[in-house]
Image (cartoon, rainbow, N blue to C red):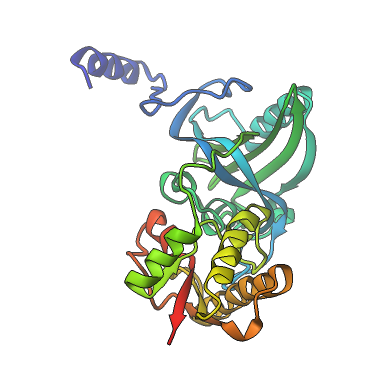
Amino acid sequence: MPLFSRWLVAFLLLLGLPVLADVEGSADHPLLSRYPGAEIRSYFQRDYEAIYLAVGPNRGRNSPTDYPEHIEVLGRITVINYRIADPAASVMQVYQNYASALQQLGFTSLYDCANDSCGRHFVSGLHFRISKTHSERNLFQTYNVSGNRQEVRYWSGQAQLGQDKVHAGVTVFQRRPQDPVLVILQIAESAELITDKIQINPEGLHQAIVQQGKVELEGILFETNKATLMPSSADAVAVIAEYLKLQPELNFYVVGHTDSQGAFDYNLQLSAQRAATVVATLVQQHGIAAARLMAYGAGPVSPVTSNNAEAGRAQNRRVELVLRD
């Protein structure tokens, strides 16, 4: 920090005034100004990424569904964590201001809740357990907010603003009455994913099979914690089917893999179900002989990299085509 800035901070502290210090590179979203006296503690923006908005309460503890009912929204995302040090600011006051501002912009509500109606551990469930972005998992101070001393309010909604469909979520919470009020603002604006950066083609698949005996199936994506293929996977499946038709004498294992998050047995089952979905899609929609493909779930036991960070976990969640001798 420059010397002048350090002097200014010291001067403000002597006067008993709050010192606001936004993280470097951060800014308010153009749609919404911040609550007076708030500072940005963490900030995350991507041109194309997913956010998860709650549409129901937190469902349970210590299970594969230890998070709120939610939807995944893709697009240009901005996630901002504000801290409001003003002791006069209350969770209700901050929440009502955000909800009112979003409604005035034309947003319609998807879900709102307060305290017990949100379910126990709502904040950590929404912003940690189901989250796949670095912003949610690593940048935010989240609490297991529950009990009489702790307060949380949440609102999510959507709007058509010009040509853009926009989703927003705002979580306002406070661990103890003497603690600052914290705000997590999530906004996703509709954006097109550029999909031609990596080409999947039969020749590339064959080269990998010849050299390594297996190939990772790029572009095969599933809904969160489900064995349901996302619609965006259709083109990749069609290319895999084309390759299989060009190599009718070859038989394969279709192997599903997960990261190490969650219970081992659950991941093993999920990976097998996802592999079975790929096989069923190739057989039923593309006419590949069922005898040529065998689905297998490896769960988390064969990672390609460390599971310590989300980037590694994303690589470990995959489906492979493995040559059968």
